[in-house]
Image (cartoon, rainbow over all chains, first blue to last red; front, top):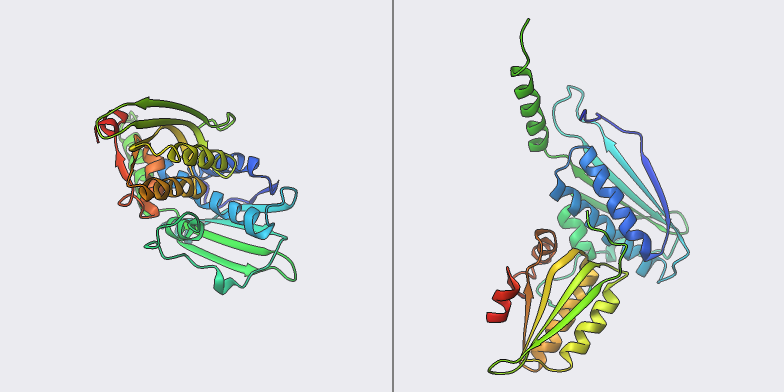
Length: 169
Length: 120
């Protein structure tokens, strides 16, 4: 498959109903594989986004299941020389309750108790996670993950092997 | 990718043993925000029966998020409250990875097969 250097953003809009989480997970994983992540990384990115959406539903919308959530996926290009890996950027926007972003922290994992793992999971899986308030209403979450060079090396190795097998004129 | 159209399915079996009964609950499906409340309810219901060992067979769980993990943590706390044992059996690599990310893989007893769990 030819990996795109950059992609126009893919926008997904859902209501804050937990039933849609599996749909978004599936789409996320497919998109991640298409842009060059291995399947394990794609699954973990799907998990990170699932956690983000669950937090929006539970905290941003306080359990309401009829509110909008906008998700945007974008592959940002590699460097100008084509070398180096691109970046996957995922943006989640909601129109719910605003919180002080300094309060959005990973909790102490030594405190064994149910709940509160979502932010930790997001920060463990993604390279960058940032929250900001959107105007007067809602929050915006941005998560970025580098497409690892090892995945690009594997692609070049496959291309090189294919060229060696080509019959010469 | 796992098929999450079906609701989570539970199958419970009971095994008398020296030292007390072992209850095995096999869970099949995706355990996310939709299904975790029912998983929590079922696990706590079983734990309230105070089996000596509660085995949660995860071989049929294709996906789990932190809400599913929270259900298992609550069940673990309930079982420990009466000095029982909770064992997680046969998690897929995908499910196991969330326990590793949350650093709960050293808190839970996790074994590779249901048979190992019965002998644990």
